[in-house]
Length: 261
Image (cartoon, rainbow, N blue to C red; front, top):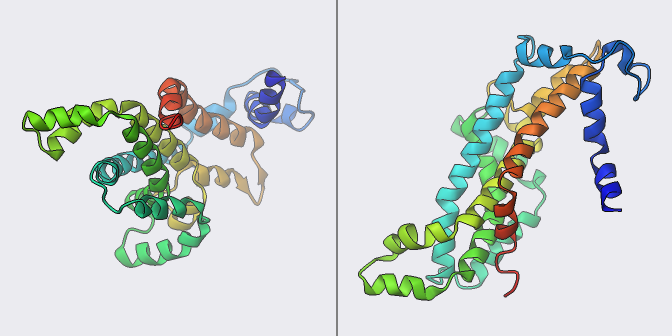
């Protein structure tokens, strides 16, 4: 039963994988037709061609996703420590911040466009990093705070007796113990930033176009290049999929932090 559900959920991806290896003639015949045999022409067209600069789209997506992860780590780790250990903001601050996750992303899209245009960061990697970091910060705080609450405070108290201050305790004692939660946050932020389309299409034009927007360039007035589009889908999905696969055990531990309490 579980296998059947997994098959149904992944059916679009499986169909894209099959289509990416079929010839253009076979694509127009039937979903299960392989007349003409298998081909790698579509992958060669997107990875080696210069018409759509697909490699550039991948590079932009990687920079945006990794930049969002880095920025969120820099902001969320000390913020979570201040909220949980120092009682900053009491019980209301985290609730207000996490409630922003319930607001539709479209609510922020137009203000971001106006602000980023006035600041000169429209159609830049920096602008998209800021947008994705902002929208994913509530989730990061929720996970890191949950992980931090599970850590025994006695460890930090012992370090204070030895003369360690708050920053020394955070970076030397707490940060290594937060590894599962930080990895979970990194994976989720990377995947969400990689797959973002709304901010990408509104806040980019030509210089910072990621793969989610670049894939639409294969839909033209002359027709849809189904084979190339399927190859783009496969390549763009494999990267975050592999990233999550190798760190899945940390993802489960990080997401379950605080569940018992």
